[in-house]
Length: 417
Image 1 (cartoon, rainbow, N blue to C red):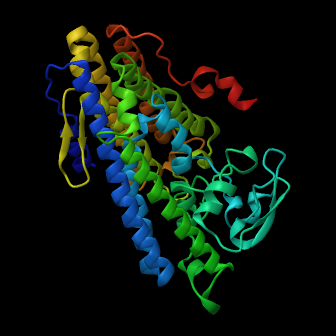
Image 2 (image 1 turned 135 degrees about the horizontal axis):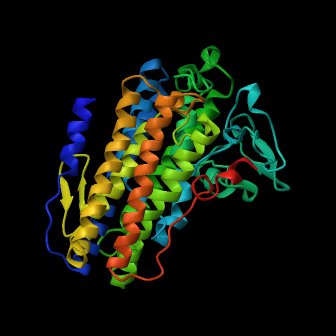
Image 3 (image 1 turned 30 degrees about the horizontal axis):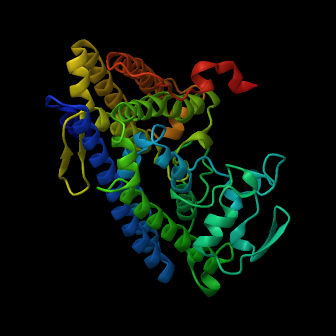
């Protein structure tokens, strides 16, 4: 725990500098480009690990693929702060990080999972076991599982958002399987033999399962290639951001506030605690939610302070939003900087507790006072920093900036209706 908190303290150290709006936006775009490029690099490593698993299934190649997936989440989660304010990211993000998902669409599930529902007729379609099926009245030939089948036919099939067929979480499910431990510790336990050939194959359709895993990682790589390019020197995302500096700053603060409040504090943290439901964990199959939360929070901190540590240890940094706010109102900047530090440290406490053996599943359990204290400590810190972000919006004289909400924060009674 001491080592992690020391590392966090080093990340939080900031050096203020004078800034202008164009330079601040350039730093923001540089961090986005670096973050998506790092995500691409580690997705390519994941693709290689998946290829090795499919070619030579074993406990070792399964472990290596899982480790590669976990590593790939570190830079990607730090890019989530670019959502909400940048339409090009919002229109794209559902292909790579949609959650939660009805995993029965993809592969076999436990009998307790159930079947089709009024809300989702394809919740238990099981594409891996189905070389053909009818979807929205159309007969689909799925004899060959390809990236096009996943992205163009299956993803959000029938207009249902829970029909997630692509992205990190589809891959996560294929590597870990369902986590059937409830609020006890433990991740999914998919056996490596689910990818084995011949008589060693478990749960059937091992070749098709491997094809699905390979196709989904290929899509992840191509999607990240595209997004990294959008933030390059002539990329559409960078151009849209810098063409109108006031709108660009609004996009920065919208992303910070929406991720901080409605998305993370609300939908990803407080909602799961209110329901005592591990199915509400963001990385529920792998039990990686503690890291997911931490790196989301760190991404917000990165954007405000204009600094991002790349996967090779180098630093992308420049004039920052903090510098602009400090020029406009030093007290607002000091308060927001302090609130951001507190939220990252609160999320680090969850991370270190989970790494020490107190699983996030256990934190969500009814009657877990220690777990509730850890989660609500972070929720409260994220809500507090959102209020400071709102004050920063006012200090910069920006109009029309609004943040995503969540019933769990804004109307808790509605959660149980």
